[in-house]
Every structure is written in structure tokens, then in C-alpha cells.
Image (cartoon, rainbow, N blue to C red; front, side, top):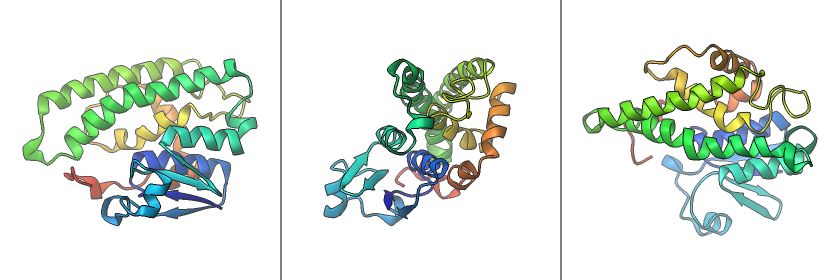
Length: 220
């Protein structure tokens, strides 16, 4: 059985659990990090020398870094649906996944979510948060344009089944984005995509997780 280390309110852990849910894979979730601790335990460091979650253990194989885990799961258990053999077919998936990690997540999760929600009010840098929110909306405008061409980030999905691996890192941001008390421009395609994601049981279970424990906590 797969084992996943991390706390359910962790964005990066949610990405992994969402895909596991989509693949309907039996797994054991082991709370770690935050108030659960355990990241400096020798046993955990043997799995991930960096001492961070998520970590996936599949038999004798340990995989760390959320996108490496997503690719491992897709290649091992979801090839027909999530990981096509053709490199050209995989390229747009990889592109959107990496773009999410290098561009969208720094703007929204680091700049807005950390800067505003996770930072105590007295310490917030409001001009920096405003700039981050502007960058976030520029990023999401690109997603909006992409979704205008199809129901999911790779059109109708690599095999016509809809969701692909490209949707997971970006789509995982949306619950927090739409739950925060921030100004949001109208993006009909993005909003419709979010509505479609909310209909998926795995998304509701693993991504739509209350995050109130994180408010004003920089050390969690």
C-alpha cells in the first residue's frame, strides 16, 4: 500500500492526495509536519534528506517533491490516462506543471496566501501583497485563455477523459483563491473550470480542506 507523509492542509500534499484519489489507489496517510512534527526523525530523513513533505513511499521506493511524486504516480499507475508514452503529447502537461510551480505558485501562494493570510496583520506588507495579487491575476488570465479552448488545461484531456496531470497543480490553488476575501476579476472560464473540479469527489475530499489553522501562522 502507498504511504503519504504530510498534513492535509499542506498545498503540496493536497496535490498528491488528489491524484491518488483520482486513480483510486489504496493508501495510508501519515500526518507529518506542522503541529504533527516528525520531519527531523531519522526514519523520515532516510526517506527525504531535505526533511519536507510530501513524501510518497511505494514499497522500497521513496519519492519526494510534489511534482516528482505526481509524475511517478502518473507513470506508474495512470499511464493510459495521465502519462502518455509520446514525449510530444506529454510536453504541454510538463509545461503547465512547471509553469505552475515557477510562476503561479510564487505569485499566489507565496505572495498572496503567505503574505496576507498566513502573515499576522501587523506584519503584512500591503503594497507587496497588492503586487503579488496583480501577478496572480496575470497568471490566471493565461489560464482563462487556455480554458477558453477546452474544458481542461490540455483541452479535453490527453485521452478524451477530461482531467490530465496539467490540471492538478493549477487546480489545487483554486480552493484557496476563491475562499480568500480578496478582489477577483471576472474570469468565466476559470470559474466554470473550478465548478467542474468541485464536482470531483477526490477534489472535494483532498483539496477543499479548511485551512483556518494556517491563519497568521508563519511557523507552521
